[in-house]
Length: 474
Ligand code: NAP
Image 1 (cartoon, rainbow, N blue to C red):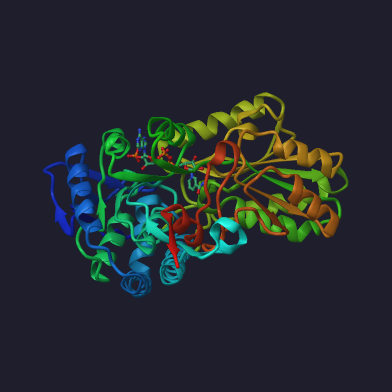
Image 2 (cartoon, rainbow, N blue to C red):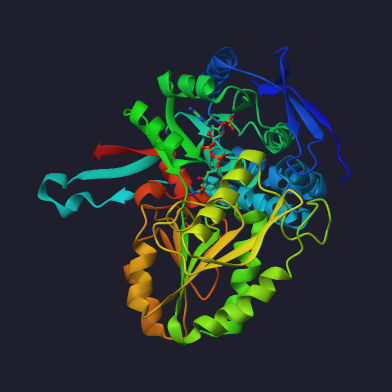
């Protein structure tokens, strides 16, 4: 894989800041160093918060915020291949998938610009109550204040965009802590925001010791909202420690799909094979558990498994690659162990396993619900397929998880689709499309252990603002 090793200091108060310590960013595929990033900690985070506090004293008008957001979208477009290569190199995401992520980041900034321009309160119908006669009342939406943002490794550009862009649209300065494994995309976005005219202080990016940076964001009263995407343990822990802040959590899932007997087997198998293994299953809504009504079970497997085996596994820098490695050795060993445990418990591994240090897309049939590959979030290229006697049973088993982010159903029956939409306990139900589907203007977020918010610029902007009521006696 051709690399473009990059050296990036931290971005604080509009300046690039070296700290004397460096973190090496290595390709999870080749182990090569693809960049070096300055390591920050509590001191740099406090300095960033001081700058954000100063920025907040000089609000940017909505048209200016929208203008910057549109420019960032344009700059990502202009440097699209560089953005995609950066994602691909640091995360080992197949380049064709990384290009899609770069395009989605453009979309996220574009939708955020729209929100900046239409951010408004509402008129309160005061004379609806006798006490309100003679009064005019309306609300205005005010920025909540400084936003602390923490992002994961798996979408190092677009999930950062989902925090930075709505915050700017809402008029909030941000201090961002990206994942240590994938900080280069976030620092590239900071460069593009600065180039687009973002004044100093509105964005700082601090890479480094997670708990040290997290502690400052939790403890500093100037941070009014923490937006976190990542694992549940860290996310819920932040919320417990910051009861007076808004702590908005986008967490994991164990994504189920219900395949009704009336669904088109080949079309369903094609969509699921193409989507279940994207970025080696390291998406929070990667298809993990497929429940197929018994009459279609054998036909589904006969169609699905060859399509999975046709996926090209290998170098993420290669245009043809569908599936690259998981993020690190620990993840590879964990996923392998979970596959072995399932096999030892009597499940059938139909295809997959390890190959030259890479995990191949793996399909396991007849897996008990208490196996880790069923009930935990695999976050690797593994799909479990089980037969069920009815759609009701499929829905019940799909719901038998602590998670609730997104679920899917394939059927040609409107009744079945609506029943599933009503009864699947998830933040989103996707009908006749893989539940890995996300478009960036959608309200996206989970219930139960999967989180407590919706992202998508229109929703995030609401979270990042407060309504102030104004009442006028006429
Ligand atoms: P993670 O280990 O929880 O890390 C996420 C972020 O939290 C990283 O920036 C990490 O920093 C930071 N962090 C770790 N410990 C911290 C602490 N004590 N205080 C403050 N920050 C801390 O998650 P991940 O492995 O990167 O991502 C995978 C998880 O994210 C999966 O569960 C996946 O489902 C979930 N996810 C959810 C969504 C969604 O929208 N719902 C989207 C994508 C991913 P370091 O990197 O420095 O450790």
